[in-house]
Structure formats: C-alpha cells, structure tokens
Amino acid sequence: LTWGEDVDRVGEGFDIALATDVLYDVDLIHPLFMTVSRCIPPGGMFILSHIPRACYNEGNPPEAVEDLEKYIIDQAVRYDLHLVDILRPPKEDGLELETKSWCSANSFVGGGILVFRRS
Image 1 (cartoon, rainbow, N blue to C red):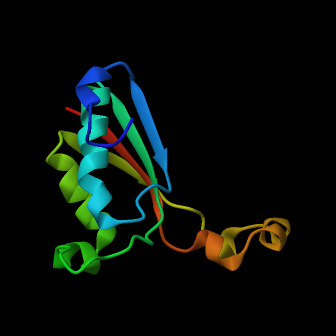
Image 2 (cartoon, rainbow, N blue to C red; image 1 turned 45 degrees about the vertical axis):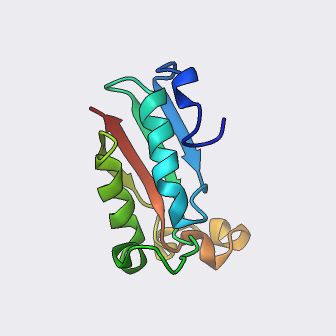
C-alpha cells in the first residue's frame, strides 16, 4: 500500500489504524490522512504516534514549520479525522531513577500520541 494511491481497493476494512514515527517529511501528511480516512469507517480511530522531526522543504506552508503538531491536527480535519486526545510522555523529573538509567534523555522530549476519530 502506497499512501494516497489505490486506497479505494482497501476499503473501510479496519476499525483502528495505527501509525508510529512515520512523518519524516511534511509532504507525507496529506497522503497519510487520505489513506487512513479511506481505510477506517466513520467512528473508526486513528492513532498517530508523532515525534516532531519532519523535514521541511522550501514549498512547505509556514504554519507547518511554526507548529508541526498543530498543523497535523488542522490537516486531519480536512479528511474527517477529529482529534479526541493527545497522550504525552511523562516528564523526566517524574520518572523513577531506574527508568532514567535505560532511557536516553531525548526519549521524553516533544511528541505525543494523537488520537483521532473519523466522523
């Protein structure tokens, strides 16, 4: 399956779609949402684990560069995907010492899990 192509072939066969760490380029947002919106039925859920490290190209909208997460949420609405919740990783100071010993300091910076429902 290539995002944005031949998605009608898949149909609304999934109640939940899950994508993690997939938006490495701002230009992938629309093909991803197009595919997800056609693969889940109304009421279906899309869970996107997002880490803000996408590449920006010269033609990308300035609002995507300024606040990528907000841009992602705003674009999702165009595909009938509405934000239900954002789950954030814990703050480093709230973690047990044992957890800190095996996680890099960057593990808890930015990002989150965006939960959408298709209307």
